Image (cartoon, rainbow, N blue to C red; front, side):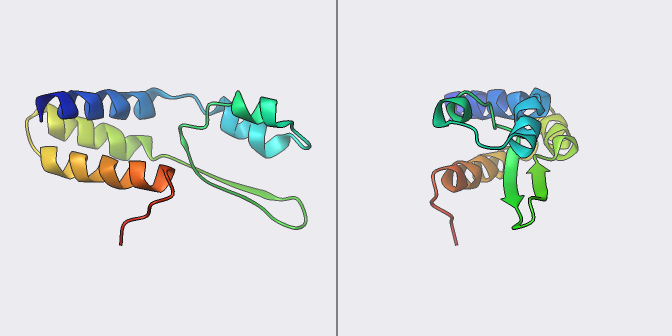
Length: 99
């Protein structure tokens, strides 16, 4: 459990500090090749929609919520909550939404 906790904390820190440049590029670039898409770091991206008219909606991780959780975890509270959060998050990333 200690290794799992350390891994989750590292992932949370990465999310709290990640740059959103590539998510913005995705919204503004048209006709990207698969190689260009593969090179983008979309870690902070939680949702992306493009309308029929070309408008984009980009949703990013909530850094403030992640930082609050990191503070709680640094005081030794909410460990199980963090584990559940990341298991659900990883499940969504793999296309396995939990119900």
